[in-house]
Structure formats: C-alpha cells, structure tokens
Length: 250
Image (cartoon, rainbow, N blue to C red; front, side, top):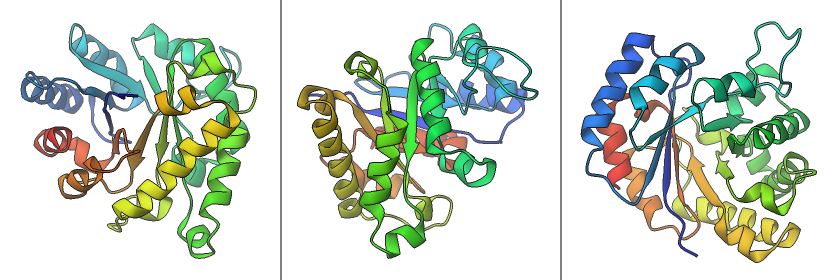
C-alpha cells in the first residue's frame, strides 16, 4: 500500500507569535512547489491561533503539542481538544517522550488522550520509544509492545483511518546520538507486525509510522530508503526553515 510521507515539525517550547509567523512565512514560500508529501507544524499553544490564520488555504497542517483528556472543567492550566479544534488544529502530538519524562505522562493517560482526540476527529500522532537503559538491557521490543497495548486499548478498526504513530528512541532525542537506519527499520517493522497481529494487515499497512530522534538532513536521506519509515518527526531542525525544507526534500 502506498503511504503518503508525512513530515512533522515539533517546535517545542520555542517561538513567540512574531517568531512563529516569520517561520511560517518562510516555510510557505519554500514549500510552494513540493508535492506528494504532507507537512505539519506544531508551534507552542500561544502561537496556535495566529499560526492557524497564517496557514489558511495552505497545504501545511497544524498540530498541537499536547492536550488533556476532558472536554472542560476544573483543570487549571490544561488545554482541551475542543479548544484545539476551535482554533483550527487537525493533528495533536500525544505521549511525546518529553511529556513522559518531565510531566508524568503514562501509557494510561496517553490512551485517554488518544480516545478523546479521536472522538473530536483530531488526528493523534502517538509517540512511543525506549530509553537508553531499556535498549541496553535488550528490552526495546517489550517496551514498545507494552506502549502499543496500553496506548491503543479500547480502540477499534475505524479509529485508525486517520492515525499516526511516531517512534522516537529517547536515547536519540536531542543527544546527538543517531539510531542507525537498521535499528529504526527493525523497530518500525516490529510496530507494523504488532499492529497486524492486534488488528489486521490492511490497517497495519495503511498506518503511517514516523521516526523522530535528532533528525537532520543527513540521516533523513538514509531513512528515506527505509521500507517502514513513512515520514519524520523533526525537533530542533524544524526551527530553521532551510533545514526543515531540506529534510522534507529528502
């Protein structure tokens, strides 16, 4: 099955509204002639509305970096999926390793957020991956399997029509360490095979699985050749328009 490549720029906690709009304008100019690829950017919450206006009528999609699992209520400081829909988001990152590492995100909370996102017709970008210690103990596949099992609990076949998974080995995020294309393909293939066993082959073959972890133009070229990599989740390199476009062109 042909899967359209997807490149997501996660801007993390970077960029005022002015900086966001400048970057978006650069990207819009540079991406004008790019075809057969989906591009999504995830600015900080404070810039989402302005970004949504700037991206109107463009081919670049808008993602939030996180969301809460309730529609509304006494949850000071949280952002609901309803708010994200209201300002024009179509995607949302869920379970990013930094959310898990610094803010107590668990597989169970990830599952609740995924179910809420799907109910609101937001496309989840479900992030998973192992730590360096887990890889050294050869626990990678056990960790990934558990994250998939709990993260996708109570989901049904039709939930995966618009669904994205992003494998991000924690040991390769912002560390300068790169997973080899062989290591990435091994895990992506395992994810797809696990999905096939849990659901069915058409679902597993249709879902896009991204790689995230110190993505730069150099390793983007290598990953392009990898059978089960359907795109990239780009961090720091997506904050520079020329670098991000170079990665997209790869």
